[in-house]
Length: 267
Ligand SMILES: NC(=O)c1ccc[n+]([C@@H]2O[C@H](COP(=O)([O-])OP(=O)(O)OC[C@H]3O[C@@H](n4cnc5c(N)ncnc54)[C@H](O)[C@@H]3O)[C@@H](O)[C@H]2O)c1
Image 1 (cartoon, protein in one colour):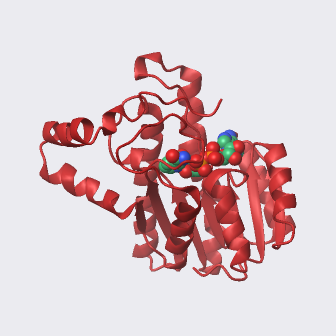
Image 2: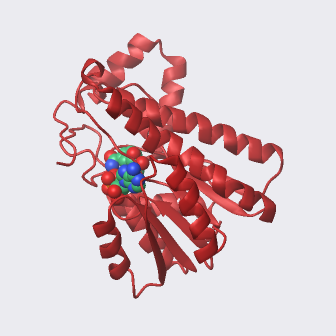
Image 3: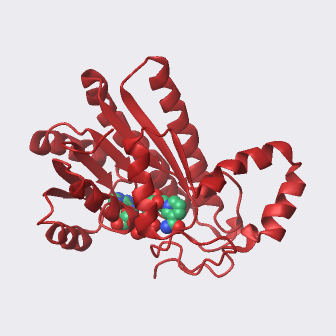
């Protein structure tokens, strides 16, 4: 879907790639940018930074709270009108350690923010899009949702779930020949600060070009965007190689299974 004259809602849009995608949307002529974030200071800073680019509405909301998601979407409808494009971008990673060191609180929070919240919000937005037969839902998953990786088991699980849900919903909409489109995005590590400390043989993605690729994917109604493109082949290698050979190639030779060894995340 082209971005001109659209209302675009981005969760986690006060930082990282969500913030950049918001700016790009305004530069491309979006009618209004609606940003949801848990961080009120970052929201205020983003609103004033983007003030000259177009209309920006900000909402402080903790998307881990389903009731808050439902209530805030009602406010958005009243205050901003229909949402044409939803980008489920907010995400967190917790616990830079192996699974035996994770806590119940961190498991619940990660699943609620990364997995449950995009579903709950989409459940609010989708009926309106279906009734207008127009809309686009973009779900930011992760390359970590396509293969196992030590020290990110819970995060990986949350993103595997997003891919499964997003792909299934996309096929449902295709089967009913709906004009509501779904793009699932699976990027490799991006230097936004979320994964500070990660070391990788493969280049870590830069935020600006990554955000541009996602916006382009929405404009082209791309159904699945692995970033970089080579990550589309993960499934191919998983399919043709015995899993232990895949482990050896990606884990030992390419060092993927050691990428999180020095991960600290944001302080
Ligand atoms: N950075 C990476 O290496 C990477 C790689 C692949 C996928 N991703 C995914 O891309 C998305 C954006 O990542 P980023 O690197 O720009 O992250 P970021 O940390 O820069 O931005 C995330 C935003 O989400 C907001 N947020 C966190 N919890 C929230 C909550 N409960 N309610 C509302 N807002 C909340 C934060 O305040 C922040 O503004 C995430 O879904 C992430 O999992 C990131």
